[in-house]
Amino acid sequence: MRRDAYGVVAAMAAGLLGCNDLEVCGSTSQDITRTDGGVYRCVTSEDCPRTSRVNVCVTDVSPVAECVQCEDTKCVTVIPESC
Image (tube, rainbow, N blue to C red):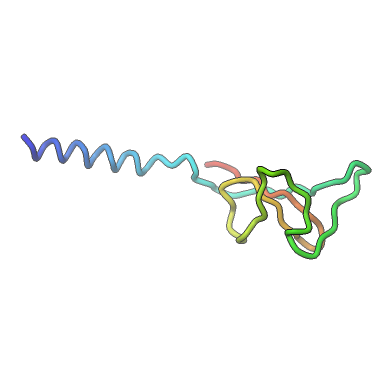
């Protein structure tokens, strides 16, 4: 009987591991524009404007949360796309 309980717990754990709300299948980039319609220019990602809830992108891999980065001397917001 005890062996069956372990099997049920193992099956539930495996099912939960398969469910990942943070799974990201890609991302889109959107220019960060000024009020006059021009784009913000940058040298590094830290130069880009952002709110307190948005981080600087630290890798080239699709992020789990929205972040900002400097691409070709212009600031962009990188928005993850869920699967």
